Length: 123
Image (tube, rainbow, N blue to C red; front, side):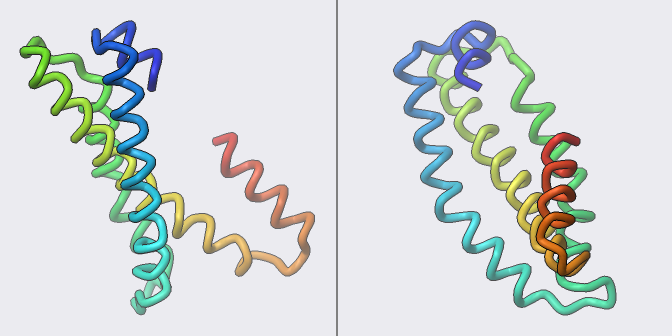
């Protein structure tokens, strides 16, 4: 993201770094909230499946918008990049947290869980 924000989007290194820091702060708040939401979800599809099914389309849209480079003023670029980065991060968290929470339900074997998580991260 730092490379993209600086070399493609045209933001300064300081602004790009601050945007990434702000994104991490929002992620520190959003990830536990997402975990609580998954734990309190009760649907006919289970606790996790609705979240990564519902999160796929918003994630695709926000990532596409994140890597879109509109021709706007520098201040608008900073706001656009910050908002899209946070929305893409929230939508990623909304998908990755439930997918990760499914792993312990797949198998009780620790090695199998670690292999499944590695495959998840690769793909």
